Length: 123
Image 1 (cartoon, rainbow, N blue to C red):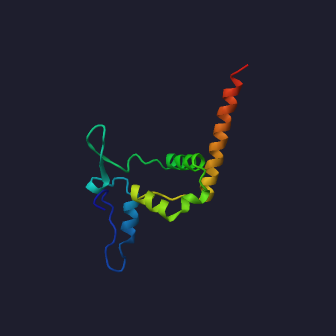
Image 2: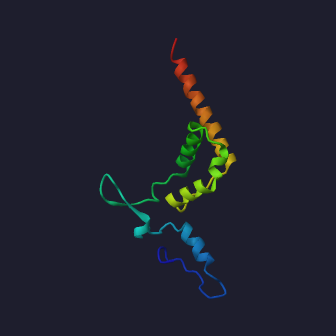
């Protein structure tokens, strides 16, 4: 690996799958490829688009979207939606409809607790 110095066998009998798997996990991987950079609108500088992707935040926003627009849980499994998400972030991990259902239930429970606390603040 050019990034961390880890050595992998390169003979034709070993293949390249082990290096490919390592590149996905390598801690010292460098994202200086211009294809991985976006122009930051506020500062005018180039910035790594993958550094700010938070999978948990993505799941919460997806659950909120399903609730707000009254979409079916199956929405997250639509091929067009998955193509769009893969275009925006090639490393995105897709969620199943049951995972989204569980996230919506958690969102409901959080909002219910907020409402309880708000109503308890009144006498």
